Image 1 (tube, rainbow, N blue to C red):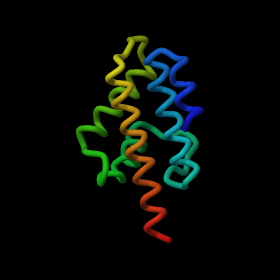
Image 2 (image 1 turned 60 degrees about the vertical axis):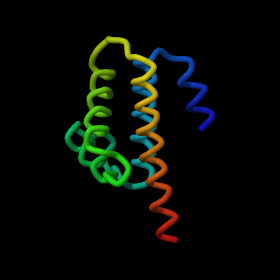
Image 3 (image 1 turned 180 degrees about the vertical axis):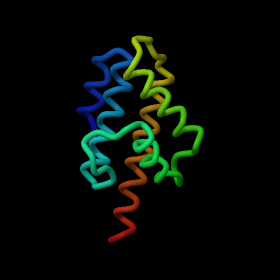
Length: 104
């Protein structure tokens, strides 16, 4: 967790959003929630829908919008948008850990 915080501080906000998304995607892949190396946007959105217990529809849609914009535009993003993406990252990872603990 400290490693990601350190990397996030070094980049601009657009790169921070891309980094958070890439980390989240890799974590989901590592836990078997994502089976393909690359997913289309619709497929990735479907995976995130599985976290509806912690991620409201509006949050998921906003997250997907920010991630797409960061990937395909050169616009800069606000610190608030980066914080929002961090919250989504932590919500999904926390929910994932909670599921694993519940199974044990």
